Length: 115
Image (cartoon, rainbow, N blue to C red; front, top):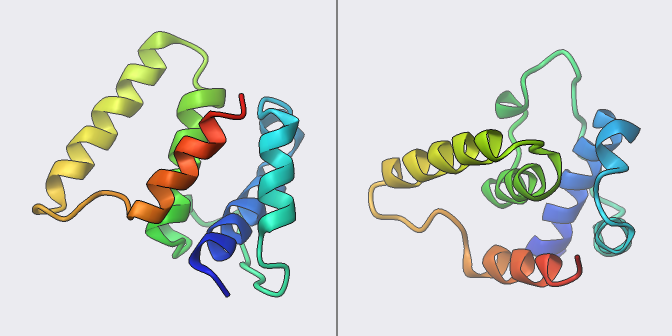
C-alpha cells in the first residue's frame, strides 16, 4: 500500500463521517481522486464521539484535511487566517522537522490545481 493511498483512505473515512454539508463544498474532481485512489482495503475507523486529533490519523492525512478546511470549509478570511496562524504555530513546534512530507506537498499542489 502506498502512503498516498493510505492518506486518501484516512481522509475518505473522515469525510464519510462529516457528511454532505462538508462534502458538497469540495469540487467533484477532488472528491473523485480521494475516492478512486484510496486504498480500499485499508479501513480506518472514525469514532464520532472522539475528537479528530485523537483518532490517530497520519500526519499527512491531517495535513490534507487542514488544506481541505482552508480551501473549502473556511467561510471567511478571518477563519482562514486563524487556521493559517495555527498551522504556522504548529509547524514551528516541530523542532526543525518539515511539517509535511514531500509526497503530501506534491499531492496537495496537484489537488489544488484541480479547482
